[in-house]
Amino acid sequence: MKFESEEIVFTPITSLLSEVIDNRGRTCPTAEIGVPLIATNCIGNENLYPVKKNIRHVSVETYKTWFRGHPEPGDVIFVNKGTPGRVCLVPDPIDFCIAQDMVSLRVNEHVNNLYLLAAMRSPQVQNQIQQMQVGSMIPHFKKGDFEKLLIPMRDMPTQKAIGKVYFELSQKIDVNERTSKTLEGIAQTIFKSWFIDFDPVKAKMAGETPAGMDAATAKLFPDSMEESELGLIPKGWEVRSLDEISEYLNGLAMQKFPVTDEDEQLPVIKIAQLRAGNTQGADVASGLLDSRFIIKDGDILFSWSGTLEVETWAGGPGALNQHLFKVSGKTVPDWYSYLSTKGFLSFFREIASGKATTMGHIQRGHLSESKLAIPNLELLNRATEIIEPLISLKIKTSIESRNLAEIRDSLLPRLISGELQIPEEMLAS
Image (cartoon, rainbow, N blue to C red; front, side, top):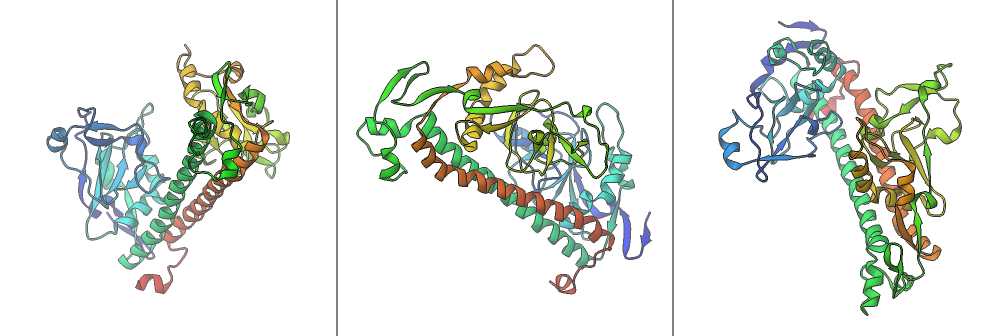
């Protein structure tokens, strides 16, 4: 079945594919080491390629014999169970195989693969997928319904141009995300070396020059240790708890602050929004809140219940919901509050996992129990000169990614529908 609307031809996706590769619909045997096996949690419409997290593996033998086929670079991976409609591009080179509940779609000569990725993420196609999915507990998209899924098709030059625009914006966002992680990784490495492992102090005690710093900075570290309730710490440093050095402002039950004026509202930032890094699909609350509970870019958020995370927020203004702390420095800079709180995250998760409830959490008393050695102000100021720009650039880069994503996602449906015309020079390239 095909029907036309001006330049757009809505075509069943089955006529655009040369092959659909799946995982036999069954759980494959896993191994400790081998070929990475990505699951549906690795696929998201916010990323260009699958994101490897909580990875399992399959043996080389299983890889060779279990599967009907494997994805190839340029294929489009489609999640058909759990959260149907999430799609990603298979990278080149590929270094994984796919678990059940997803399929790899290989295009034929009638469609450009980058265009297919973009089209499948467009509202025009996502809405169809949502309407066709079945199952109330675990939604899924039946493979037999692929022939009913209609892709808005354009001529090949237009496909390639739209696919290129979408790909390059997405690629820039991916690069930004990797840059942000690298910047934070550098900051965490310095923080741990200087203020947790005391590497510069230990070097001076051994008669060595502390690595990676100038003489003026090295001079700020003591050359001996002293006993404390934490054991040996640098001489002259003080033991303080997290809640002594930082403020942990708990959010509000935002259902108590309904929107009374459409012009005065804020998205409610809950744990789901913190994990996603944006406010898409968020509830809304009145914007007439105490300013302390209004989140802005750069704020430090700590979800202390359910899924425990500590992140710098870059998703725009929002309202601080309960089960989230907004963290800020009292006697230390904000970057120190961020990295020190994040340093205790594994400890907090262990506490939460031990709770005999459906939603593990920590209590304020655990903040008081979490202690570390705090250096003098002069050393903190020097560290601020080095670490704060890294965290600030990380936040700036994340904000740029958010803006690019907003531009990309607003352009996409208008490009595909033909509301926005592709410039001639792009069609010729």
